[in-house]
Length: 548
Image (tube, rainbow, N blue to C red; front, side, top):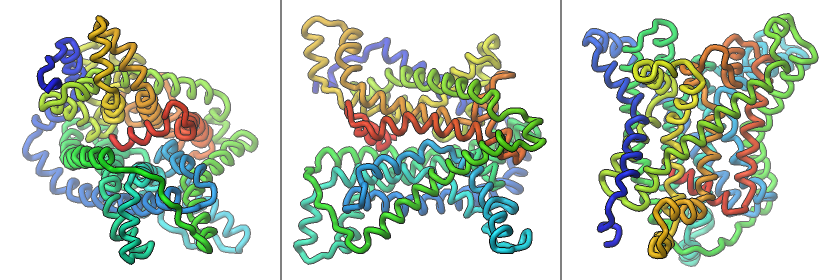
């Protein structure tokens, strides 16, 4: 009753409306450009490109979701429900692959498994194989793209399922065991159905990642909508065709966004109504070494081995440089400057995105209705757009509305902030939702104005969730590639740009130093947040990922 009778703070509503409109600029841009297309162009794209791209993209999304669900559920169950050795450390170590960009994983796979790569060289040197005779898997294929993307995105499923396992009701499983079900039957018929909302939430997030990925599929030469859009822009400068392809990609993403929102609401209601008590750990017995080997293998493939490869190629490029390394002259010279530019851009972009998300998130927590839900839904539509199109939309906006800022560092920072805004909103909703409304009302009754209440009551209580949201947004900003390709001003290079340029020319000794530094810089906030229980940060991260 109180929530329904409260009036909107008009200033807050205006700010939220302005933020939502600006965040929707890329979507508005591609709709306008696509509507200007001739029917003949649409017909030609449908006949020549769209069916193949649609099939490739759907196959990649389906295989990656299956791969990540199997990995995420198995790892979460081993860590949360069994006596796995070192489970308290594995709990946060298995979240660290989120720091590895997919395109860096693609570089490592190419270094390992391409013809003439490390595995091929070892086979020739130690096993006596002739060149090009040792059997190697085709990494530039659906299987290669699925493996690379799956190894860097399985933490989405692992985190959501792990959080659900920790908050589920033990009495339900006890009832199944008392009725005669064994451990495996209890898991299949009781635990797994209860985990379906969490599994679906993580799987849908993986699906949206696949649809928007560009760097991984581009390096592995696997054609999807994002690579086709980039080719239309870079090769032909055909923004109309790129907009049409983007519209198809948006239509594929929108159902995922709707289903994700519905599942998250059901999941939050279930978690809040469920009783909780500590679960009894399942003894692995003779299966313990095998389980430990499985967990260690996944961690090695997803993070440890890529780090070793990057470190090895970095040392090779510095100690034993080739003529190409000398021509590039990059390893060890300007890497720290590019690293600082990446940190500065990610920090400012993430901070601006979090600040801009305050208004819509606070409205959602205190004045939830159809209008607020519409504003939040519209602001989240950028999740359905590839970074390359977000960059095009923002460049069009600056060129038409604020030409003085076009192709400047300021436009790049603002573009990055609005690129990250949908993630900041989705990950930050829980932070304000968990602030007791009674405390704010008590402060208002004592005579404090709304601004002071927000600054002294709301922000301190929501701080753990805000920090967790900022950390996740910062990680995304550090790995962002397509937006920078479009919006970066001349002479402004970041680690991601240097990685892309060197890897695109297959100069891996020059791509490895910036890639290694990027992963290390991204790992630091991930490790600190996930391993530190102070202020409830690890719990806030889980809730942010669940809401995302």
